[in-house]
Image (cartoon, rainbow, N blue to C red):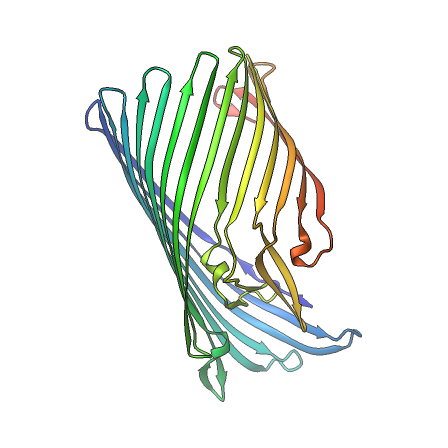
Length: 406
């Protein structure tokens, strides 16, 4: 039983800058930057009581937590766009962003009977992430109705994490080696893409492919065992996509699309260490976690009238190696770990609607009804599990004056 009444007030600072310049009627360059910083500190007097299954009080301690957290991030990018005389275009983009996180904790265990400090420990956590993204895209029209795009994308992620825990023993601070760990994670992606588009009077079609070459490395250091471990993984995958649109008239259109995409595990999810920063949600990494691949097929119809727009859609989504967080009970503790749960599928229908009955009133509605089914046999269930779900959102805007909206 835990009673945590800690108060915290974060201070957030945000700034951004964007500049673009037309070098000529054929060339445009631009830069942008973003800065973010957040810090806060808190004190929590946490009343912990431990009971046995019969309800008897086994341990009672007040854990005083002095916590300070700071995180900052900044990014900068530059782009160049060139238009050729034949209608071709070449675009180049480079982006760098980083993220730093620093957390300090000082704990003092207090005897609730006499208010004496009976134990002291601390924990220091540091994250440092660097991300690089660069892209070159070439667009080439083939006559009046055909269009070709090709290009290259590079992505590099460098991530490091340090967790240091110490405890005071006989008045002297000593490292708690069993809870100390460090890891560094790197993922390098090279992507080549190609798409071909055909336009006609009433319809257009587009097909595309993206080939991905992935190389990732995880280095882990566990002081308790004096063990350094390096894990490497390489992968090649092709992502297809296709889309066909038919225009009945200026008000109605029909579109069928297919796309495959991926969800990649984070470095923190791939490390093999135990993250007990939050004792109510102890996380164990999974070095065997694989990428989740998602296939999406969607059919939608759009009706656009003066003051009224409606788009109903039907969709099917298939997930392979679906990433799910699973809880495991070990003794008296519960550990949470991301796992690949096999294959799941979702099918449903959604509707988005916008209506302006009079010039000063806007009505919006979005709804989604779907059935989600997952093959849970890989995590201990004997049959597939499924569930019907729904989600509805609505909004109303009244333009009271040209400069006032409710």
